[in-house]
Each structure stands twice: as structure tokens, then as C-alpha cells.
Image (cartoon, rainbow, N blue to C red; front, side, top):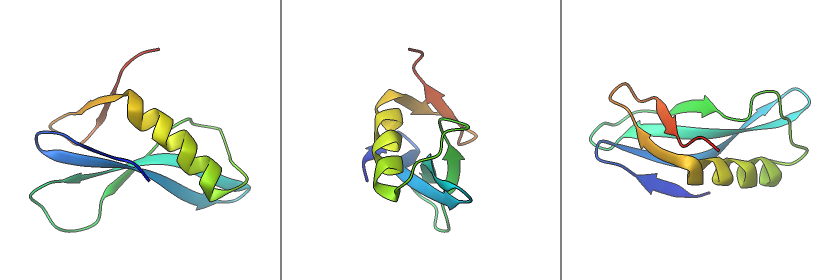
Amino acid sequence: MARKEFKEYEAVSAVIPGEGGYSAAIAVKALDAGGAPRFHPVLPGEKFKTAHDADLAAVRELERLIDVDGEGELVLVNQ
């Protein structure tokens, strides 16, 4: 798991288990709020055999994250 902190939010690499394997995700939570984070699936359509592989993919996507907007949405750099 990797983590990035922004002005109002923190983002961490995450994994979503599902049918056919695991999906890579980035979980976002406001720094000053309690409660559960919001999970944003990344790499739509890709499934990974293991949670470890999905997390590695999520870490790579987290590296592309340049900000989290005021609504908690991801702002990724284009490749």
C-alpha cells in the first residue's frame, strides 16, 4: 500500500475483490473527516489474479495522481 497526501485529502492504493479476481483502486478520504474512504476503481476492465498484483497496479496509478479535486475525484496526469 502506498499513500499520498494533498491539501484536503489523502489517497492510498487499494484493492477491490470481485468475481474473477481483484481490481486496482485508489481510496480517498478527507484529512479532517472520519468515516470510510471512497474507493475509485482504476484500470477499468483489468482483473488481477492476486491482491498483491492489483495493489502493485494501484501503486503505479497512485504515482500518476497529481491531485484530488474539491469533490474528492481523482486528477491523474495523462500518459
